[in-house]
Amino acid sequence: MAVRADLFESPDHYQLDELLSEEHLMVRTAVRDYVKKEISPIIEDYAQRAEFPQQIVKQLGDLGVFGPTVPVEYGGGGLDYISYGIMMQELERGDSGVRSTASVQGSLVMFPIYAYGSEAQKKKYLPKLASGEYLGCFGLTEPDHGSNPSGMLTNIKDAGDHVILNGSKMWISNAPFADIAVVWAKNEEGKIQGVIVERGMEGFTTPTTHGKWSLRASATGELVFDNVKVPKENILPNVIGLKGPLGCLSKARYGIAWGALGAAMDCYDTALRYSKERIQFDKPIGAFQLQQKKLAEMVTEITKAQLMVWRLGVLMNEGRATPAQISMAKRNSCEIATNIARSARQILGGMGITGEYSVMRHMMNLESVITYEGTHDIHLLITGMEITGFNAFK
Image (tube, rainbow, N blue to C red; front, side, top):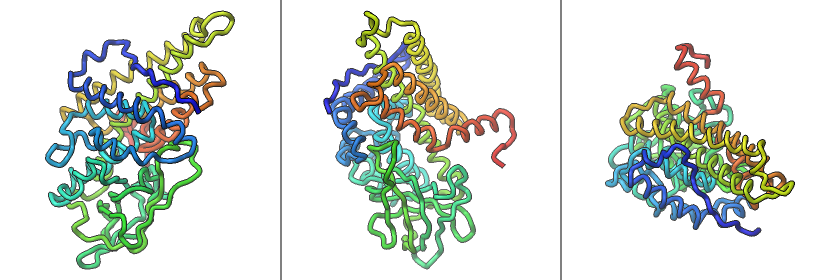
């Protein structure tokens, strides 16, 4: 398959670049250049073959996108949350699966170890995760417990200097290649705790999930625990209860709010370029009203979402962003990205379903992004509960 030149430019209809610092713009340039050089030329081929490009793990570590908000002393970048958001936007502009790899590593593996872990755990794991030497995954979702994680069956039982872990998790990004897993399980009192499970522990397996039509270039699998002995020093000491994993998800959802916007921008940019080149009825299709309507609506929704995630980034930096605000942004970005991908596909006509363009791959990927880490409906209900005070979950 011929690889098209990656000419992407991000739309900025409201001069939002003026809200970004020099450091933010440098971060964006670095990640965008990386995506153009290393991701765009290979990603269609890997997606068509449903294969994870393992070489990117070390590349992403070298680029500094694993745990960029984690302090430098633990191997992180010591950057702010807008920098993190920009990184996720640029990575997902390349592919949602690539951004998933980085999101999971930073927000779901490094963050809980940094926030809830012991000093020994931080020093042991964080630098290797930041550099890409270790790949991590996050075990919360179970075969029968997705939107309701409090019903989880995975459990740990005390056995002296270690605990015995039993259960299973599914739909786990990075699982097949992960060196460690941050796993959430119920203790004998029924309270949720986090444990760090390492590849090679007896009884721990990670079967690959096959047959996906979405996130095909991302590695997805299960985590299966059959009487796994986990040393007690691998238990995260500083959190008990569902607030542990939910705190991680807030950080990851924040990254998705920026990331899905990257996919939307790529679809818009592709459709805009195509509309200027494709001639029908003796003129470019971009000259027709219905195509202009689609493009105008796309750039409007992108601009609104850009303002939303930028403001959310400011609130994150100030420590004032609420989980409900993050939910709203995650849901909005995923919804507009999904709609924009569909409109872009229509503008491209038959070419839109081929791997020669990125649009159909983004569209399929976004069907996962709109569902994982809180479905579209669950995020609506989180906002509903915030504004009415009534809990519609029970």
